[in-house]
Image 1 (cartoon, rainbow, N blue to C red):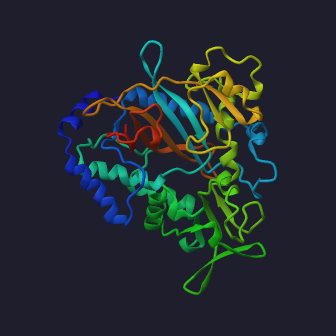
Image 2: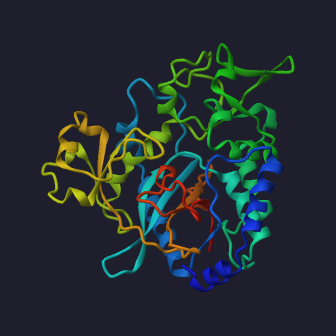
Image 3: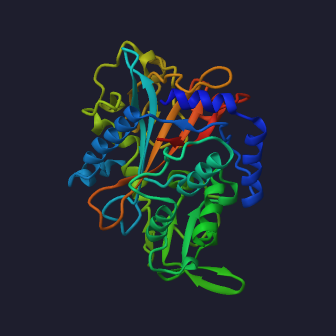
Length: 395
Protein backbone atom coordinates (compact mmCIF):
# COMPACT_ATOMS: atom_id res chain seq x y z
CA UNK A 1 0.00 0.00 0.00
CA UNK A 2 1.30 3.49 -0.80
CA UNK A 3 1.98 4.96 2.64
CA UNK A 4 3.25 8.31 1.33
CA UNK A 5 -0.06 9.02 -0.40
CA UNK A 6 -1.96 7.81 2.66
CA UNK A 7 -0.21 10.35 4.89
CA UNK A 8 -0.86 13.20 2.48
CA UNK A 9 -4.50 12.23 2.08
CA UNK A 10 -5.16 11.89 5.80
CA UNK A 11 -3.43 15.17 6.69
CA UNK A 12 -5.44 17.12 4.12
CA UNK A 13 -8.80 15.35 4.63
CA UNK A 14 -11.77 17.64 5.15
CA UNK A 15 -15.09 16.31 6.40
CA UNK A 16 -16.90 19.07 4.48
CA UNK A 17 -15.54 17.77 1.17
CA UNK A 18 -16.64 14.24 2.05
CA UNK A 19 -20.15 15.51 2.73
CA UNK A 20 -20.11 17.37 -0.60
CA UNK A 21 -19.20 14.11 -2.35
CA UNK A 22 -22.17 12.35 -0.74
CA UNK A 23 -24.48 15.24 -1.58
CA UNK A 24 -23.40 15.27 -5.22
CA UNK A 25 -24.33 11.61 -5.62
CA UNK A 26 -27.77 12.23 -4.14
CA UNK A 27 -28.34 15.43 -6.14
CA UNK A 28 -27.14 13.98 -9.45
CA UNK A 29 -28.93 10.65 -9.29
CA UNK A 30 -31.85 11.40 -6.99
CA UNK A 31 -30.79 8.60 -4.69
CA UNK A 32 -28.45 8.14 -1.76
CA UNK A 33 -27.06 4.59 -1.48
CA UNK A 34 -28.05 2.82 1.76
CA UNK A 35 -24.56 1.32 2.07
CA UNK A 36 -21.85 3.39 3.69
CA UNK A 37 -19.40 5.16 1.38
CA UNK A 38 -15.93 5.34 2.91
CA UNK A 39 -14.16 8.63 3.50
CA UNK A 40 -11.17 7.48 1.51
CA UNK A 41 -10.05 5.53 -1.50
CA UNK A 42 -7.33 2.89 -1.15
CA UNK A 43 -3.86 3.53 -2.59
CA UNK A 44 -2.41 0.27 -3.93
CA UNK A 45 1.33 0.00 -4.60
CA UNK A 46 3.15 -1.79 -7.40
CA UNK A 47 3.92 -4.99 -5.48
CA UNK A 48 0.34 -5.51 -4.33
CA UNK A 49 -0.96 -4.67 -7.80
CA UNK A 50 1.27 -7.33 -9.35
CA UNK A 51 0.13 -9.92 -6.79
CA UNK A 52 -3.55 -9.12 -7.36
CA UNK A 53 -3.17 -9.42 -11.11
CA UNK A 54 -1.15 -12.62 -10.78
CA UNK A 55 -3.78 -14.11 -8.48
CA UNK A 56 -6.57 -13.25 -10.93
CA UNK A 57 -4.72 -14.73 -13.89
CA UNK A 58 -3.95 -17.98 -12.06
CA UNK A 59 -7.61 -18.36 -11.10
CA UNK A 60 -8.71 -17.49 -14.64
CA UNK A 61 -6.43 -20.28 -15.89
CA UNK A 62 -8.69 -22.74 -14.05
CA UNK A 63 -11.95 -21.17 -15.26
CA UNK A 64 -10.92 -21.16 -18.95
CA UNK A 65 -10.03 -24.88 -18.96
CA UNK A 66 -12.19 -26.89 -21.40
CA UNK A 67 -13.44 -29.12 -18.58
CA UNK A 68 -14.63 -26.30 -16.31
CA UNK A 69 -18.28 -26.79 -17.26
CA UNK A 70 -18.00 -30.46 -16.33
CA UNK A 71 -16.39 -29.88 -12.94
CA UNK A 72 -18.80 -27.06 -12.08
CA UNK A 73 -22.06 -28.75 -13.10
CA UNK A 74 -22.63 -29.87 -9.51
CA UNK A 75 -23.15 -26.22 -8.58
CA UNK A 76 -26.38 -25.97 -10.57
CA UNK A 77 -29.55 -26.45 -8.57
CA UNK A 78 -31.63 -29.40 -9.73
CA UNK A 79 -34.61 -28.24 -11.76
CA UNK A 80 -33.50 -24.62 -11.64
CA UNK A 81 -31.17 -24.32 -14.61
CA UNK A 82 -31.80 -21.60 -17.17
CA UNK A 83 -31.92 -22.55 -20.89
CA UNK A 84 -29.54 -21.23 -23.56
CA UNK A 85 -26.48 -21.11 -21.33
CA UNK A 86 -23.59 -19.15 -22.79
CA UNK A 87 -20.21 -20.75 -23.45
CA UNK A 88 -18.69 -18.84 -20.55
CA UNK A 89 -19.54 -16.17 -18.03
CA UNK A 90 -19.74 -12.54 -19.17
CA UNK A 91 -18.88 -11.05 -15.79
CA UNK A 92 -16.33 -12.25 -13.27
CA UNK A 93 -15.42 -10.86 -9.85
CA UNK A 94 -12.78 -11.94 -7.38
CA UNK A 95 -12.71 -10.68 -3.80
CA UNK A 96 -9.32 -10.59 -2.08
CA UNK A 97 -8.64 -9.80 1.55
CA UNK A 98 -5.41 -7.88 2.04
CA UNK A 99 -3.74 -10.14 4.57
CA UNK A 100 -0.48 -10.62 6.43
CA UNK A 101 1.40 -13.91 6.15
CA UNK A 102 3.41 -15.52 8.96
CA UNK A 103 6.30 -13.15 8.21
CA UNK A 104 4.11 -10.06 8.24
CA UNK A 105 4.30 -9.63 4.46
CA UNK A 106 1.12 -8.36 2.85
CA UNK A 107 -0.53 -10.71 0.38
CA UNK A 108 -3.97 -10.91 -1.27
CA UNK A 109 -6.04 -13.94 -0.31
CA UNK A 110 -9.13 -14.98 -2.25
CA UNK A 111 -12.35 -14.72 -0.27
CA UNK A 112 -14.79 -15.50 -3.05
CA UNK A 113 -15.19 -15.61 -6.84
CA UNK A 114 -18.45 -14.69 -8.59
CA UNK A 115 -19.68 -15.24 -12.14
CA UNK A 116 -22.06 -12.32 -11.74
CA UNK A 117 -21.99 -8.56 -12.38
CA UNK A 118 -20.88 -6.12 -9.72
CA UNK A 119 -21.02 -2.32 -9.53
CA UNK A 120 -19.37 -1.59 -12.89
CA UNK A 121 -21.18 1.73 -13.29
CA UNK A 122 -21.12 3.05 -9.74
CA UNK A 123 -17.40 2.31 -9.35
CA UNK A 124 -16.70 4.39 -12.45
CA UNK A 125 -18.57 7.32 -10.91
CA UNK A 126 -17.24 7.08 -7.34
CA UNK A 127 -13.64 7.03 -8.55
CA UNK A 128 -14.25 10.26 -10.44
CA UNK A 129 -15.82 11.84 -7.37
CA UNK A 130 -12.87 10.95 -5.13
CA UNK A 131 -10.67 12.65 -7.73
CA UNK A 132 -12.91 15.69 -7.80
CA UNK A 133 -13.04 16.30 -4.05
CA UNK A 134 -9.70 14.93 -2.83
CA UNK A 135 -6.06 14.88 -3.79
CA UNK A 136 -5.68 11.78 -5.98
CA UNK A 137 -2.56 11.89 -8.19
CA UNK A 138 -3.24 11.78 -11.92
CA UNK A 139 -0.83 8.87 -12.44
CA UNK A 140 -2.85 6.57 -10.17
CA UNK A 141 -5.69 4.71 -11.86
CA UNK A 142 -8.73 2.63 -10.95
CA UNK A 143 -9.59 1.16 -14.36
CA UNK A 144 -7.29 -1.22 -16.23
CA UNK A 145 -6.50 -2.96 -19.51
CA UNK A 146 -5.51 0.30 -21.21
CA UNK A 147 -9.01 1.73 -20.84
CA UNK A 148 -9.69 5.42 -20.36
CA UNK A 149 -12.94 7.12 -19.34
CA UNK A 150 -14.49 6.92 -22.81
CA UNK A 151 -13.31 3.46 -23.84
CA UNK A 152 -14.43 2.00 -20.50
CA UNK A 153 -18.01 3.13 -21.10
CA UNK A 154 -17.82 2.03 -24.73
CA UNK A 155 -16.78 -1.46 -23.60
CA UNK A 156 -19.76 -1.64 -21.24
CA UNK A 157 -22.07 -0.40 -23.99
CA UNK A 158 -20.73 -3.04 -26.40
CA UNK A 159 -21.14 -5.83 -23.85
CA UNK A 160 -24.51 -4.85 -22.37
CA UNK A 161 -26.36 -3.16 -25.25
CA UNK A 162 -24.55 -4.51 -28.32
CA UNK A 163 -26.24 -3.64 -31.61
CA UNK A 164 -29.69 -3.21 -30.08
CA UNK A 165 -31.57 -0.11 -29.08
CA UNK A 166 -31.19 0.56 -25.35
CA UNK A 167 -34.94 0.27 -24.78
CA UNK A 168 -34.83 -3.34 -26.02
CA UNK A 169 -32.32 -4.26 -23.31
CA UNK A 170 -33.38 -4.46 -19.67
CA UNK A 171 -31.43 -4.67 -16.45
CA UNK A 172 -33.40 -7.31 -14.58
CA UNK A 173 -33.71 -7.53 -10.79
CA UNK A 174 -36.18 -8.51 -8.12
CA UNK A 175 -37.76 -5.29 -6.85
CA UNK A 176 -34.81 -3.15 -8.02
CA UNK A 177 -36.02 -0.05 -6.15
CA UNK A 178 -35.55 -1.98 -2.89
CA UNK A 179 -32.02 -3.18 -3.61
CA UNK A 180 -28.91 -1.76 -1.93
CA UNK A 181 -27.31 -1.66 -5.39
CA UNK A 182 -30.02 0.58 -6.88
CA UNK A 183 -27.46 3.36 -7.43
CA UNK A 184 -25.68 1.15 -9.97
CA UNK A 185 -28.94 0.55 -11.86
CA UNK A 186 -29.68 4.28 -11.94
CA UNK A 187 -26.22 5.12 -13.26
CA UNK A 188 -26.44 2.33 -15.85
CA UNK A 189 -29.70 3.83 -17.12
CA UNK A 190 -28.18 7.32 -17.13
CA UNK A 191 -25.04 6.27 -19.02
CA UNK A 192 -26.36 3.57 -21.37
CA UNK A 193 -30.09 4.27 -21.50
CA UNK A 194 -30.88 0.74 -20.30
CA UNK A 195 -34.04 0.63 -18.15
CA UNK A 196 -34.11 -1.45 -14.98
CA UNK A 197 -37.11 -3.68 -14.47
CA UNK A 198 -38.49 -6.04 -11.86
CA UNK A 199 -39.09 -9.63 -12.94
CA UNK A 200 -42.80 -8.93 -12.37
CA UNK A 201 -42.77 -6.28 -15.13
CA UNK A 202 -41.76 -8.63 -17.94
CA UNK A 203 -44.61 -10.07 -20.00
CA UNK A 204 -44.56 -13.08 -22.32
CA UNK A 205 -46.28 -14.03 -25.56
CA UNK A 206 -45.02 -17.47 -26.41
CA UNK A 207 -41.23 -17.16 -26.30
CA UNK A 208 -41.32 -13.41 -26.91
CA UNK A 209 -40.66 -11.11 -23.95
CA UNK A 210 -41.75 -7.48 -23.59
CA UNK A 211 -42.60 -4.77 -21.10
CA UNK A 212 -45.19 -2.03 -21.29
CA UNK A 213 -44.46 1.66 -21.13
CA UNK A 214 -46.78 4.55 -21.96
CA UNK A 215 -49.19 2.17 -23.65
CA UNK A 216 -46.47 0.58 -25.82
CA UNK A 217 -45.35 -3.01 -25.90
CA UNK A 218 -41.55 -2.79 -25.99
CA UNK A 219 -39.84 -6.05 -26.99
CA UNK A 220 -36.92 -7.31 -24.92
CA UNK A 221 -34.06 -8.88 -26.86
CA UNK A 222 -31.36 -8.80 -24.20
CA UNK A 223 -31.44 -9.21 -20.43
CA UNK A 224 -28.63 -7.75 -18.34
CA UNK A 225 -29.15 -10.11 -15.42
CA UNK A 226 -28.81 -8.82 -11.86
CA UNK A 227 -31.23 -11.29 -10.29
CA UNK A 228 -29.81 -13.29 -7.38
CA UNK A 229 -31.36 -16.59 -8.45
CA UNK A 230 -31.52 -18.31 -5.08
CA UNK A 231 -33.11 -15.20 -3.54
CA UNK A 232 -35.75 -15.18 -6.29
CA UNK A 233 -36.59 -18.82 -5.54
CA UNK A 234 -37.69 -17.78 -2.05
CA UNK A 235 -40.03 -15.07 -3.39
CA UNK A 236 -43.15 -17.09 -4.09
CA UNK A 237 -45.19 -13.96 -3.29
CA UNK A 238 -44.29 -12.32 -6.61
CA UNK A 239 -46.95 -12.49 -9.32
CA UNK A 240 -45.15 -12.86 -12.67
CA UNK A 241 -45.34 -14.25 -16.17
CA UNK A 242 -41.61 -14.44 -16.76
CA UNK A 243 -39.73 -17.40 -15.30
CA UNK A 244 -36.00 -17.77 -15.82
CA UNK A 245 -36.21 -21.55 -16.17
CA UNK A 246 -38.48 -21.32 -19.22
CA UNK A 247 -37.09 -20.85 -22.72
CA UNK A 248 -37.42 -17.34 -24.16
CA UNK A 249 -36.14 -15.59 -27.28
CA UNK A 250 -33.71 -13.40 -25.36
CA UNK A 251 -29.95 -13.11 -25.04
CA UNK A 252 -28.61 -13.28 -21.51
CA UNK A 253 -25.87 -10.81 -20.66
CA UNK A 254 -24.55 -12.56 -17.63
CA UNK A 255 -26.31 -15.91 -17.91
CA UNK A 256 -27.85 -16.91 -14.56
CA UNK A 257 -26.24 -20.38 -14.53
CA UNK A 258 -22.81 -18.79 -14.15
CA UNK A 259 -23.88 -17.29 -10.83
CA UNK A 260 -23.73 -20.85 -9.48
CA UNK A 261 -20.89 -22.26 -11.57
CA UNK A 262 -18.41 -19.57 -10.46
CA UNK A 263 -19.10 -19.18 -6.76
CA UNK A 264 -18.04 -20.74 -3.47
CA UNK A 265 -18.37 -24.01 -5.39
CA UNK A 266 -15.22 -23.01 -7.31
CA UNK A 267 -12.99 -22.55 -4.26
CA UNK A 268 -11.99 -26.23 -3.75
CA UNK A 269 -10.80 -26.33 -7.38
CA UNK A 270 -8.17 -23.66 -6.67
CA UNK A 271 -6.18 -25.32 -3.89
CA UNK A 272 -2.88 -25.24 -5.80
CA UNK A 273 -2.87 -21.43 -6.06
CA UNK A 274 -0.90 -19.63 -3.32
CA UNK A 275 -3.40 -16.77 -3.16
CA UNK A 276 -6.26 -19.14 -2.27
CA UNK A 277 -6.69 -20.35 1.34
CA UNK A 278 -7.34 -24.06 1.81
CA UNK A 279 -10.97 -24.76 0.90
CA UNK A 280 -12.91 -28.04 0.97
CA UNK A 281 -16.42 -29.29 0.49
CA UNK A 282 -17.47 -30.28 3.99
CA UNK A 283 -18.71 -33.59 2.60
CA UNK A 284 -15.18 -34.39 1.38
CA UNK A 285 -13.52 -33.80 4.75
CA UNK A 286 -12.80 -37.20 6.33
CA UNK A 287 -11.17 -35.80 9.45
CA UNK A 288 -12.43 -32.53 10.87
CA UNK A 289 -9.50 -30.24 11.82
CA UNK A 290 -8.90 -29.95 15.54
CA UNK A 291 -8.18 -26.23 15.18
CA UNK A 292 -11.65 -25.24 13.96
CA UNK A 293 -11.07 -21.73 15.28
CA UNK A 294 -8.80 -21.29 12.26
CA UNK A 295 -11.61 -22.10 9.79
CA UNK A 296 -14.82 -20.53 8.57
CA UNK A 297 -17.91 -22.43 7.40
CA UNK A 298 -19.72 -21.07 4.34
CA UNK A 299 -23.00 -22.27 2.82
CA UNK A 300 -22.75 -22.67 -0.95
CA UNK A 301 -26.09 -21.04 -1.63
CA UNK A 302 -26.10 -17.73 0.16
CA UNK A 303 -25.29 -14.14 -0.68
CA UNK A 304 -23.65 -11.19 1.09
CA UNK A 305 -22.25 -13.33 3.88
CA UNK A 306 -25.54 -14.76 5.15
CA UNK A 307 -25.18 -18.07 6.96
CA UNK A 308 -21.40 -17.82 7.33
CA UNK A 309 -20.07 -19.09 10.68
CA UNK A 310 -16.78 -17.44 11.59
CA UNK A 311 -16.42 -18.62 15.20
CA UNK A 312 -16.68 -22.31 14.42
CA UNK A 313 -16.85 -25.30 16.76
CA UNK A 314 -17.56 -29.03 16.51
CA UNK A 315 -21.21 -28.55 17.42
CA UNK A 316 -21.68 -26.36 14.34
CA UNK A 317 -20.15 -29.09 12.16
CA UNK A 318 -22.24 -31.85 13.72
CA UNK A 319 -25.47 -29.91 13.17
CA UNK A 320 -24.97 -29.76 9.39
CA UNK A 321 -27.01 -32.43 7.60
CA UNK A 322 -26.40 -31.44 3.97
CA UNK A 323 -22.61 -31.28 4.13
CA UNK A 324 -22.27 -31.21 0.36
CA UNK A 325 -23.75 -27.70 0.46
CA UNK A 326 -21.03 -26.23 2.70
CA UNK A 327 -17.43 -25.14 2.28
CA UNK A 328 -14.85 -25.35 5.03
CA UNK A 329 -12.27 -22.65 4.40
CA UNK A 330 -9.16 -21.70 6.35
CA UNK A 331 -9.44 -18.23 7.83
CA UNK A 332 -7.25 -15.47 6.55
CA UNK A 333 -5.61 -12.80 8.64
CA UNK A 334 -6.87 -9.44 7.42
CA UNK A 335 -4.20 -6.84 8.09
CA UNK A 336 -5.08 -3.32 9.30
CA UNK A 337 -3.42 -1.73 6.27
CA UNK A 338 -5.31 1.54 5.80
CA UNK A 339 -4.38 4.22 8.28
CA UNK A 340 -7.31 6.44 9.21
CA UNK A 341 -7.71 9.40 11.54
CA UNK A 342 -8.15 6.96 14.44
CA UNK A 343 -7.72 3.17 14.27
CA UNK A 344 -6.54 1.55 11.00
CA UNK A 345 -8.97 -0.30 8.74
CA UNK A 346 -8.84 -3.70 7.10
CA UNK A 347 -9.30 -3.88 3.36
CA UNK A 348 -10.86 -6.13 0.75
CA UNK A 349 -10.39 -5.51 -2.96
CA UNK A 350 -12.72 -6.87 -5.63
CA UNK A 351 -11.29 -7.12 -9.12
CA UNK A 352 -13.98 -6.60 -11.77
CA UNK A 353 -13.63 -8.45 -15.07
CA UNK A 354 -15.44 -8.83 -18.37
CA UNK A 355 -15.26 -11.75 -20.78
CA UNK A 356 -16.44 -10.78 -24.25
CA UNK A 357 -17.90 -13.41 -26.54
CA UNK A 358 -14.98 -13.47 -28.97
CA UNK A 359 -12.25 -13.21 -26.33
CA UNK A 360 -10.10 -16.16 -25.18
CA UNK A 361 -10.29 -15.14 -21.50
CA UNK A 362 -11.63 -12.45 -19.17
CA UNK A 363 -9.82 -9.14 -18.67
CA UNK A 364 -9.63 -7.00 -15.53
CA UNK A 365 -11.22 -3.61 -16.10
CA UNK A 366 -12.10 -2.06 -12.73
CA UNK A 367 -12.02 -2.61 -8.99
CA UNK A 368 -14.02 -2.12 -5.82
CA UNK A 369 -12.61 -1.74 -2.32
CA UNK A 370 -14.29 -2.23 1.03
CA UNK A 371 -12.93 -1.03 4.36
CA UNK A 372 -13.75 -2.54 7.72
CA UNK A 373 -12.86 -2.07 11.36
CA UNK A 374 -15.01 -5.01 12.48
CA UNK A 375 -14.56 -8.76 12.59
CA UNK A 376 -15.78 -9.08 9.01
CA UNK A 377 -16.20 -6.76 6.05
CA UNK A 378 -20.02 -6.62 6.06
CA UNK A 379 -22.22 -3.74 7.18
CA UNK A 380 -23.42 -5.36 10.41
CA UNK A 381 -19.82 -5.58 11.67
CA UNK A 382 -19.14 -1.88 11.06
CA UNK A 383 -22.07 -0.05 12.59
CA UNK A 384 -21.24 3.31 14.14
CA UNK A 385 -17.69 3.26 12.71
CA UNK A 386 -16.09 5.82 10.42
CA UNK A 387 -13.66 5.42 7.50
CA UNK A 388 -15.33 2.12 6.60
CA UNK A 389 -17.58 1.01 3.76
CA UNK A 390 -17.45 0.96 -0.01
CA UNK A 391 -14.54 2.56 -1.81
CA UNK A 392 -12.23 2.12 -4.79
CA UNK A 393 -8.55 1.39 -5.23
CA UNK A 394 -6.18 3.71 -7.06
CA UNK A 395 -3.23 1.68 -8.36
